[in-house]
Amino acid sequence: VKPINEYIFHSKLIVSKAEFITLYNSRNKNLTKEELKLRNEQYISKYLSLIKENKKPAENYFYYYHLGNKFIDNNKYNDALKAYQSAYKIYVRHNLNKKDPFYYNILLSIVKVLLFKLNNFEEVMPFIDELIEIAHNIPDPLFFKAYYYQKKEAYEKAIEIYLKTIDIINNKN
Image (cartoon, rainbow, N blue to C red):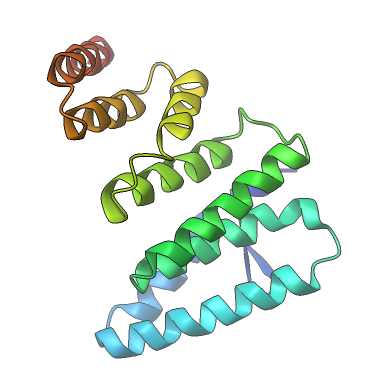
């Protein structure tokens, strides 16, 4: 049995991620922006229904995460942040496995929205620090921290962290 994050629950059918991506790309490649926006709104409604109907609230992190992605697709960044934060809170409240890559993706999504879409530098640092804690050998979280310090005009600190980021990248190659 594969872990839950190996599957996509699409319209109450369970399909593999590869099957879902193929299906999604084939259905969306010829849509106009307005048609795609409408389709995303339909997915948003579907995810909200699944969350409401779900008898196992601990599993709703999955739906909230994908709901956030659909909000991102429709440029609704505040709604996306709320959805991602709901997924995060479920993980924490139910003490789910924080080593699961899905948890990393939830944190990563929160950080990206806060830093790059909402420019909210006040709330982002705890999420960046948690990303670094669970994925200390991945350069992205350090890059986000350096970017944060750069935006705060703490240039010495930003440069120091950018250099650590480069070291991690160089050591992987």
